[in-house]
Amino acid sequence: QTGLVTLDSGYGNTAAYKSAITYLDGEEGILRYRGYPIEQIAERGSFLETAYLLINGELPTVDELAAFSDEITQHTLLHEDVKRFYDGFPRDAHPMAMVSSVVSALSTFYQDSLSPFDEQQRHISTVRLLAKLPTIAAYAYKKAIGHPFVYPSNDLGYVENFLRMTFSVPAQEYDPDPVVVGALDKLLMLHADHEQNCSTSTVRLVGSSQANLFVSISSGINALWGPLHGGANQAVLEMLEDIQASGGNVATFIRKVKNREDGAKLMGFGHRVYKNFDPRAKIIKAAAHDVLSALGKSDELLDIALALEEQALADDYFVERKLYPNVDFYTGLIYRAMGFPTTMFTVLFALGRLPGWIAHWHEMIKEPGGRIGRPRQVYTGVELRDYVPLEAR
Ligand code: SDX
Picture 1 (cartoon, protein in one colour):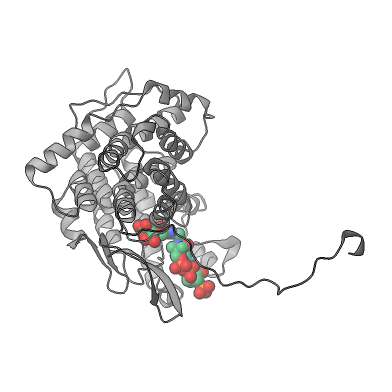
Picture 2: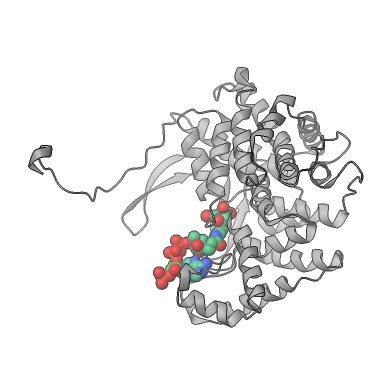
């Protein structure tokens, strides 16, 4: 059984979801997708295989994965009218705003297949979202830089297709570097699900009203945008660039954070659940080194990030508060080395998280006797009182 249950968390009853998709242990730094350790999946899997696992509950066979991938390939193209949405956005619109708007608008193009209670309609909506989000994301980037949109190709794999749509220009085809393809595929896997994080719980709550999958996912994209959540990967790079611009003095910045000057936070550090290392951060930190050296790139910001991490982990202020690097601390350095602007970093997080959001929406909508989400509250306002007429106030 999944659904909403109340658990005595030791802080009085707190409502909690039950789910069979992802297991986290914040104290031990454990993360498993459908029982498989994230370390093994990241090492040996692929993003589409991980998407299949999260949504269907089992690893696919060779034939199942091929059929899943082929079906997605057939749906990567967007209706030509969808392109007009981008004409209406200002040039400096944030890609996250464009992506969530277009995903929501997809529900207007598939009005005959939005029912959450029809298995075939749930399936085709799932395939369309997995297939079209990379196209929507790439188009948002092209809009932001004023380049022509590049159509998807059926001859390329999922990640290659996205990279080509993003970085190809009419005068120069983008030839995806295998290092970039492998690193991005791994990063998408590492972001694929994370239990009841803010955006996933948003998708479940919106979906529990029986709203369709497209608008539920659009709600998740909006929740992810916040700098305390997925927006942190962009905020980390901006933090590192600020430190670099002010002379690269890490100790000065750490002092600002500890003194809470101007609300300074060590972005990419801390977590609601992990009070130890985020297992994803360890894998991503190693990947950052591998990608930068494989691309022959050095990045002073990586040196600043390493110095920040070293000093924070040796500082009681952070140790006492159990603040460790999270998934967002190193990802931006890799995305930057791949050629993405900081405004696309959270869009890349959304691309990775999409299968997790979809898996949770399916789990929620198929829950027997599923009910609309309705968080309870503790009322802290004034007690009963009588109305005072305007003239008597
Ligand atoms: C993601 O939930 C998920 O699973 C999310 C995610 C996923 O995969 O979906 O893992 C992805 O969102 C990762 C988190 C990315 N966000 C950031 O990196 C932003 C910076 N981090 C923080 O804002 C904060 O750590 C949170 C929001 C992530 C967690 O906040 P909590 O658990 O509510 O912690 P808290 O605010 O109660 O902080 C406890 C103490 C406080 O100090 P005191 O008031 O007790 O003295 O730690 C301090 C906070 O001020 N603190 C920080 C800090 N994070 C917490 N101080 C400095 N820098 C930080 N980053």
